[in-house]
Length: 284
Ligand SMILES: C[S@@+](CC[C@H](N)C(=O)[O-])C[C@H]1O[C@@H](n2cnc3c(N)ncnc32)[C@H](O)[C@@H]1O
Image (tube, rainbow, N blue to C red; front, side, top):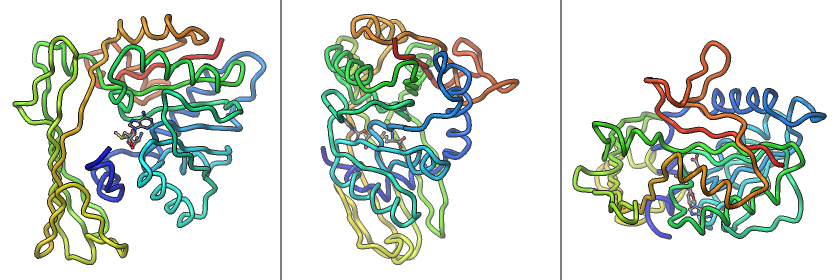
């Protein structure tokens, strides 16, 4: 795999619109609410899949659970391990495929964040992924998977592209993920999303004190760096997810939400403000 995932620092900057700590608060609250009978209220072990820079795994590790992060991309793995060391938190990083890993042990909580299952291109791949997850869950443990909301693609006004800006440590980035011409193939439900990230700041800030890794098409000139990539994206509907879970076996759906929120801030998957499809599965 090449492109924006080969430049983990830029990828993490692009995703810095998220409040990772607040998301982990909610993941832990959901764990306490939905865990199986007889389990402690907090997970002792957490596995983040398709973890990329492993921001959530690092946050879990900061709070106590033993955290493991798994990703296919060796640069993401090296970056995740380096950032964990820099932050002085212990995260085990494993380079592996989320459809065929075998870590030889089980976890109380497994999570896949930010629509990373959109990299599973076929039903077989999704089912294989879920079987691996089921084989790695402690009895009564939870799998929480965050996907994009089906409304993005099936609503009256489908969203084919999004743009946002972020600022961190003197570096500004403007991100476009998807262009209006990026059409979802109606048969395969796969789109080639064109991604453009324009990073501005002085050269040293862009490099963030580390050797620059331009990735695919990265250009640095006078404090501006432009990254371009095409990222294949597979759209999964709610009913396909349900079918994959039933085919895989070993997991049951215990809740679905439309955003990160608990208590009075709970967002129903079907609510008008829902913009994510977050599914909580429990090991059978
Ligand atoms: C959108 S990024 C998300 C990273 C992380 N989940 C987050 O929340 O920032 C998707 C990640 O999935 C990884 N990936 C893609 N296919 C994978 C596979 N089959 N197994 C494991 N990781 C995979 C990519 O290398 C990339 O780091």
